Length: 220
Image 1: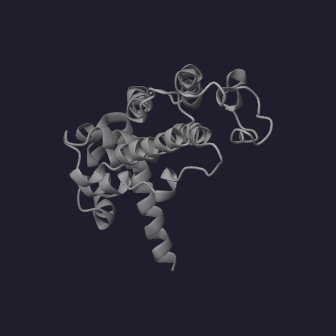
Image 2: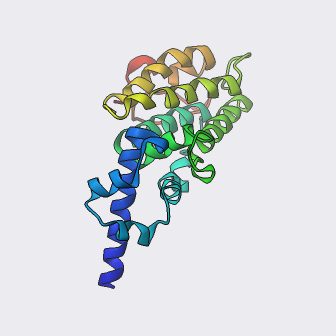
Image 3: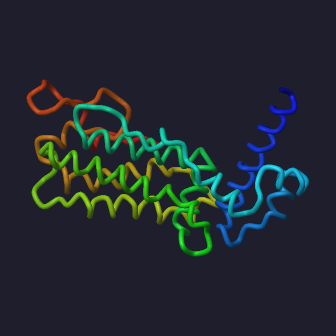
């Protein structure tokens, strides 16, 4: 048992260290030598767990399914806002998740073909939630779920160059994007009841008073 525990601990250290290097330098710029130097492990220890850099990248990119599970709630658009802010917060605090996002963005440019599910999964969740909001009558006429998804994905992909320097304010920047985006896509009836900060979820139309106006605050 003790040996098994040490093996699991070593594997976690390798994945964590590899994620830091992948996040900073990308797949092509990462070497196993750099990973070993930072982790202070032997090459034998690395290859006991991973046969190659490609296999290591695939381990880093294997994001747990629960990361892409949206919250439940009566208002689809609010669930979307909450999910996106939660994902931004996770990216800000979890280097493995950030590395998986960068590897996903590099898909087809040197990164292992099987190591890039993050971006596609995130896009699918955002699009599905926007389509739900559209079917529920929460979006204004002309608001295209595909185009709104592109805007949100643009945020998540365009902030990647800054991750090697700082992740401070990532959630706040996304909340600011929502503050300007929501008035363009949410119905006038729903907009005042949406929130960009923790609190009681808004209710569907006809179910009582709403919460604080959407412009009243943001998560940071």
